[in-house]
Structure formats: C-alpha cells, structure tokens
Length: 416
Image 1 (cartoon, helix red, strand yellow):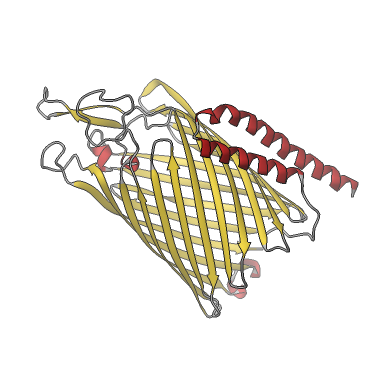
Image 2: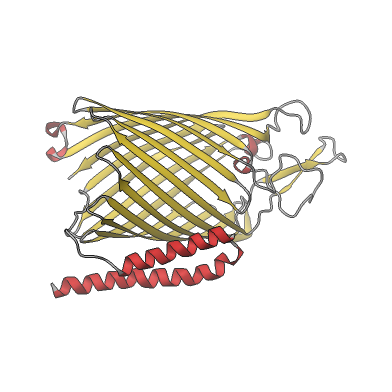
C-alpha cells in the first residue's frame, strides 16, 4: 500500500510540475491574445492544475481492454492522393497502468491546382509514431503521450498530458489537457533554408449523462502557434503588366503568431431499438480573423448482433484570413501575403457511410472479440474566392475552384 501511494505521489508531482511550467510559458505567450482567449487559456490551465492535485478517492474505475487496431486509409481528390497503413497497440501492464503505441504511414502524391500552377507534381512519405502511458487511480485517469512525425522537409515532436475524472455518481466526466509541439521546417533543394515553429494547446471538457437515453458534452480548446507558420513552397500571385502573362509570383509571408479558440458541443440520443442519433457543432475563430462553423448529424443502426450501419452528414464553412487574396494588385502589396486555399472563404459538404461487422468468437484470433469496419466519405469542396489559375478567362477572371474527394478507412480490431 505504501509503495502504491509513493507511485501515486510521483505521478501527481509530474503533472503538477508540467502544468506549472506550462502556465509560466503561457504568461509570455498570451500577452498578444484577445482578452477572451487569454482568460480561457488561464482558466483551463488553472482547472487542470486543480484537478491534478485534488484526486479524490471514490469507487475504483477500470482501464479499457487491451486491443490491437490495424487501419488502411486513403484520400483522393483535387489532384492529391494520400494513403497508407496504421497500427495501434494497447496493453495493460497492471490494473492501473496501460501502455499504448501506434505507427502511421502516409504516402503522398500531389498534383493539386496550386502545385501545378507554379511547380510540378511531387511524391513523399510521412512516418508518424506515438508512445503513451495511462495511469488510473480510483476514478481519475491520467495519460502522457510522446509523438514524432518525420518527412523529408518537416520534423515534428510533441508531448501531451491529459487528465479525466468521473464524478457525481459517474454521471459527469471532466477532462483537461495540455500539449506542446516543436517543428523543424526545411525546403527540399535548399540546404540553407531552416525554420522552426512551436504550438501550445490547452483543452477542457465536460461530458454529462442527462437522462437514461441522452448524453451531452462541451469541449473547448485554446491554441497558440509561434514561429514559421507558412508553407515554404507556396507562392502568391499579383498583377504584373510588364510581362506577357500579366501575372507575377512571390513567396507567401505569414504572421509569426496565430492564436485560435474552438468550442464543440455534442449530443447523443439512444433509441429503444439500440440505434442512436448524434449531433455535433463546432465553432472556431482565430487572430487571423478566420471564423468557421462545423455541424454534423449522424445515425447508427444495428442489424441483429452482428452488423451496425452508420450514416453521417457534415457541413463546414469558414471565412478567409484577413491577409488572404487570390490576386494582389502589385508585388509586396501588403505586409502579409497568402494564397493558400485553406485560408480562403470556402465550404464543404460531407456524406458518409460505414458498416461494422462483429466477428464471431469462433472466427476471431484466439477466440478474442474482434470486429471489422469499412467507412467511406464523399466530400464536395467549394471555394468562394480562390480561382483556378490554369483556367481560361484572363487573370483574375478564371472560374472559382472546386473539387470532390473520396476518403476510405478500413479497420480491423481485436480486443483481449
């Protein structure tokens, strides 16, 4: 018992030290934030610290079951194809400690419109891995994760801490977390170019069982980005009547800070015949004056004890960054320049369908419970102030750009 108590005290000390240091960093980083975001950041940090040091002793909860997940993912649309495998392993070391690990591979082939207008198609690979530890004490779950992602010209590392607590008779779950990421950015073909950026995230959430059939959750997240935030290959275009094409190109220039705030509200209603309805709404805003609304409706329906069908419909809309333009009037028209279509005014609609098959124990590996799932999303993108420079019509009069994409995910999961 004494040994267990010493382990608990050490874990709690790690969380307290990490959060305290993170709060000191945020004192410097949040001076340029809006008052609302600044208060939210400090509130989340304070709540995380309070939860970490005030772990209560209630009836013990249990860790999730051991599992192995194998995934194949594919995205194809707009001249870009991304696909590859992923594997996740979760194993309990004791009744209160579990270890997680995953590996993720992306093979990327890009011939998108903004690439082809100024360069040639390219291919690359991205390797990502993560190691994590979960620690459960009574009804408080703490997790620590290290992640690393590696590409030819981009290397990212991050660390995250998350804490969740069941309370009020298990009707309420409170969750809080923080993460820090550090990125090294290079440019292929340019040995001199070397930049870096950092990202700080704070999040908090509450999940509440409202009735026997209805649950709801509210999550907030504050993000602070600092450093080199644009793509080193991307350019903007401007009117230049001194050359035959009538258009010139120069590199993008972004601000070196970006502060974002997001709020998500979700609700789930469980129907008598084991089906369920889901509703999600997310609002996002940042210091670049991007504002986004994201709403999703889903329905899940079982067929016997073996199959489950899932349907979803999602709509997303955002405004443009305040320094974005599809075509600038002249070179160096303003301090900050961007023509990334993901910073433009655009919307998209997603229709998704998925089916899950619960494999009988007699057909599963080692008679363990397992399931297979196949999901398909169709996404239609419409850009309201980004034009296709490869179209005819003259500079600035090209047709507005749009495309569709297909996303496929195939899962196989084994539970021990």
